[in-house]
Length: 470
Image 1: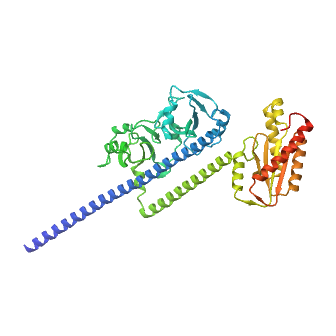
Image 2 (image 1 turned 180 degrees about the vertical axis):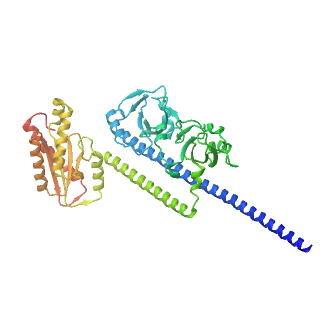
Image 3 (image 1 turned 90 degrees about the vertical axis):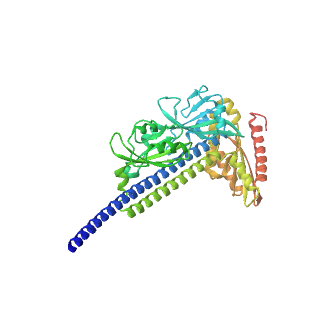
């Protein structure tokens, strides 16, 4: 009897031990599955936040480029179509989301980069647009092709505190969806960009058309707490979260995470199949380490590229602002800056050459301004043959200035060479040279050289008698 009791107790203990072991394994497996699932969602959330940041950075970079373009336009006569078009075409948009740029003027005309103009006063109210300042629009239909959906990156052109025109950087959303590349999860992830105010989808690498996030409501939702209802409440309020659904087309379980972008009320939704999401949990330490290295390298590469790109764009804009477009020499802005810098310096030695192109007024009147421009370009080219480009300035319609450290004899010899070369082209110049061993600034040298040039010019016109001496 005792033996039976002992046997029964041993069986009971064995069964209990087996049940406990089974429950422990079942509990640990469930816990491991939850941890793996949560880690997958954590990884998905990390990737989503990075993409949201990248999208915001890219949009801000686009606005930076448009702002630089607006500053250049503000420095010119905005009614001069040729000048405005040159500025609009001088910026490369290949590394931006922007497909094309347009300029809205107060009279309601819209100027495109191909030179065409449209009256859009019935669609765009200039005063209303100007009052909004710089902004990024939500999804709207294209003015020129209603079947296309666009987002407009808007920057005002401001001069003396007044908006004189408005730049539109147009992003074609269908084209952006087709071309946007995601390398995450072996290239099997998809991306949605959603307007939280109305659910409109602005970017979709999952489907062929841009719909509305509400279309997901008819799908089967899985995993407790990971349902669309939470997304319905969180996305409009700019809150991040997770969803889990079943694809209608493939029947695969799909993990999604959404995060606000920081632009308007937009949220980015990143999705991937459950199989792809869980594949990254094998060899967790190695995988996480590799992901950290790859993400860091990509981020550093991206930041390095953006720094280089913006620095290059800034250098290009600055170079354009100090370059005379007609001759390629430094312009009046650069000349005045050079004089201001010289005011606080002692220069030794210092020389200034003041040059005037003879007969420009007559050539313009008799042969047209193109012939006058040829004269100015010829003078600039001959000067570049004798002096460094950074020492040459076009300071007026027909006036040039050269700053040099050579002595007066060397300057005279070089200017004789310039004058002879121009004479061979049937052109003439008057020039004056002023040189000092030590000069406190350059302004006195400029005045002296200008006076010497005027003496030579009077002599020239006294001899040629084509107009009264100046």
